[in-house]
Image (tube, rainbow over all chains, first blue to last red; front, side):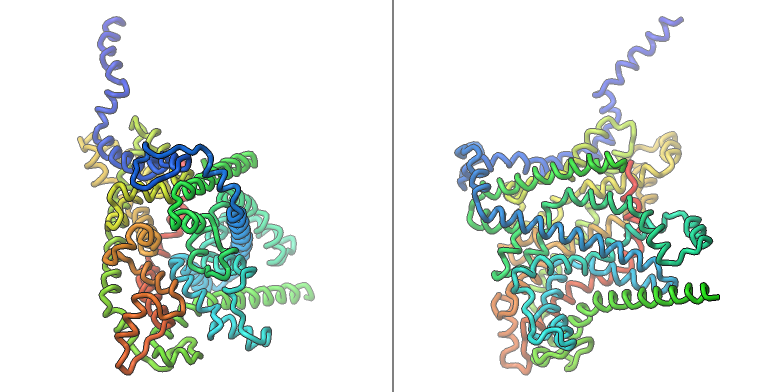
Length: 317
Length: 301
């Protein structure tokens, strides 16, 4: 009896190999494999293109006919003073954006949370999200107009308040550029960034507040002793996760707001790749820059993720 | 008694502070848009005298008429609309389909395909290798470069898959018992049930596509027919406050000999409004769905 059952089952078990299953699931294969090929072409073949960085690329020859130069392009990169300037600018603007962005979003979430008049709360939120959906091209236009010396609103206000005597050319002062980037980032993203903290605040157990009222806590004390500590895990996980993106300070923002006067403080990695690589036809060099950025970013993401996990938070990967 | 007045004072001060801060925030956010709107409807020469804030002083439609009459701008609007509509449909549909296969636990390639997509969130080939790839595929000076490279993104894929995983399995099982194939299940059951998440993804894809300019700059700048509105605005912005740039020259030539003038400032303002209006139109829908989208994006398997 036993033997006969296994002899019936055996062919069925054999049929359950990988290829047999694949054949059974050909509808699913048909629905997904074309897109698998698509993603391999558009995302993975460029990584194979990294070999360019170890060659002296000469237009017109195929990738197999190029001269191999080993790490020459990387040596050139690490000997280039501009590279260190780019690294400094990128890190500085990332850190400024991260700190200003986080602090302002938390503050806005706390403030919105204190509004009891619901229609006003909705209106303020609706307005605050709007700039997030506007392109940086439009935002850069608005920032330029607001900061212009020729009737720009910022200069107008400062002049009328007698804070300054002469209009200031904000976008022409190198030392100011990082802060303009930081503040325009806040202008565009503060409302959007506050959403996640508002969601965290909404998840706080209301009985905590009820208990604190009995203990005689006012709204400020509630904010300080209940709301802020309750959203601390959210704050730290977002901060840690964003550390992984320190080498991508954004690109559009800097590219669209920079000009010749401030370029030494505005140049970030992608601008460097464009101006010192592609525009000068140094394709191999630009590839090396891209590799440096990708690899260091990957390492940063990996370590911050491990760090977040060690803190008992759910990691990214 | 004393304690009670103290509590009231605290409330009043906090309310006052909160309302002042939020009103300032609303003004700071909206003023640049309203100011630009006023300038776009104001006579260019009059605007250059300054003092325009929230309302035009010398109302005119000339800025819009002259700009929209340019073939270059008209063509760019068509391209922008076409890329946005096509990308939105194709991306949303393709992503939903792949997400469905990845939600089937019995699918043998599930783990492998998921891994291939998730890895793309962490590595990036870089500017030059990507450019060479696009060029060798014949996608430079080609409309399809706006649609094809970003067809399925890992993030959107995860969002939709998470949503499908949350649907009751019994629906799919009973359909299968009734003899429905995978395509039938996907079209008749999954797609209708996924409407909220698909709306979210579609809106995000649409906004991203409408706002993109760097792909035009990198791949299609040699072909004016394939220009997009954002790229045209970018060029106007780059030529800043000078009368250089082909559009600027063409416009000032058109204005010459008429009673009207054209200034870089008024052109910039008018272009900015033209580019922003579609976003403002879809904004109510965006707002309805994006909070929802963010919450489902946060849930991971």
